[in-house]
Image (cartoon, rainbow, N blue to C red; front, side):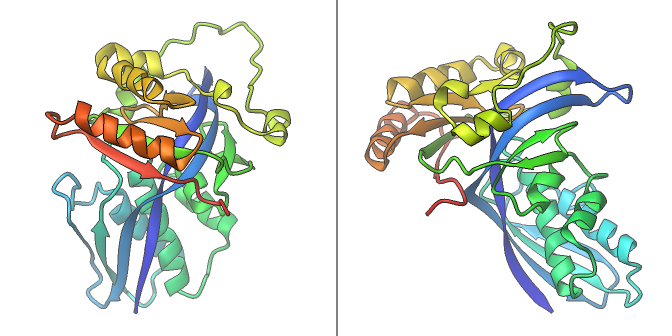
Length: 291
């Protein structure tokens, strides 16, 4: 039995760190949006009893630390795997690795969803989310049917939001990999005693999203080590973006463009500017959930 399915990237339109739990995890309020930039996975059940993965990118590990592999083992463990199935995973990477776009979590979530379908849907969406929570906070968003959501807690408590699909998205990845744990480890809460009010609350969601709401508390931490992120933001704004922001813990920066023509013009301009930067990637994308 075989199935093919996408694993979409996400961006954080807003990300506020509101505190830290006793277990060390940071508490967040973040508005996330899925994009049509996707990895692709082919899952094939086998009778080997083993989970194997192959990928077209050398940057992706093929061992048991890979999120897709870990997700498969977790699924088999959760359902008992009485038939002793194995799994062969073929992964085609389009999402940059360690880029703040959730690629690894999305791959793992798609494995859970794909196996659930191959096994005849033994788990509900809520049960899959509970299952995936042990692998990472982003799994909840990728396992949900929401194309956009406001996430709270450690990022695993979701509230559906409208898709921000009125813009054309231009993503720039400078080719460096950022360790999320390092970023959070170097983040300091500066307003511990102040009451926190999130601009992306339900009221704001109902009123719609504007570029003025773009915000990421983690930006200063990552920019301090990788100043190129600030330069890319400035370039996007100079080339006509209505707003620009680093996604997640970085280093990918995205720009919002009001129309396709301005986005295409920016791609041409930035391609010339980055002509000697072979490691840079320029990705055009649209929000999922649009017309």
